[in-house]
Image (cartoon, rainbow, N blue to C red; front, side, top):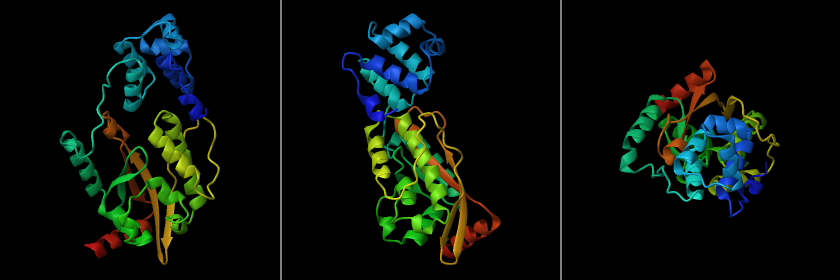
Length: 274
């Protein structure tokens, strides 16, 4: 589905258009969605066609049945004329202190292996010492003074690409993941803008085009600079069931050594930095 077409909402029926779009993307019939939401098919049909104005509780039931993100649940409530339910605080806000402590603990306990935290646009908002050390070794200290984007770092020709031995495989896997996340949030203009910027990078492998394609597990990344070679396998963690948009959209990317030699190299690099 073209995300631009998905965003073209008829002003007279924004709730119905949103619901129909999300339901179609999830390959659900009206009957299936109505059953999951605990409402009648007739009522759902009336909501989608604009014949009935749903209440706040009905919208939240439908959002839950569709497994919408907190950002999209807010959008659905606003389309229905209601206030947002979920906050979107800055990560530095006092209310998120417990979450920050948990993230700090995850990053520090993962040493001497790299770990980063990214936002919904794949911007790196935090990194442990091992990640900073590895990226500095590959890209140089001057590059570390500018913002980092996880996707762009691997996909752009002037960043990590020259140091990734299996770049075509890694790039294809990252593009599949990025496309899947972008297609899942067609109303997020900021994310869509970042996705379009990525797609303008040169020499990218063709991404999968199926709307419902789900990316597989992150593949191994083989990095090399001179005589130093490191293999990494990544895992992506999310923060449980947060009630804040910012926290839900954070991703903790934790990289493990792919073999004993890579583990020894990362451990040696940490010892040199101690």
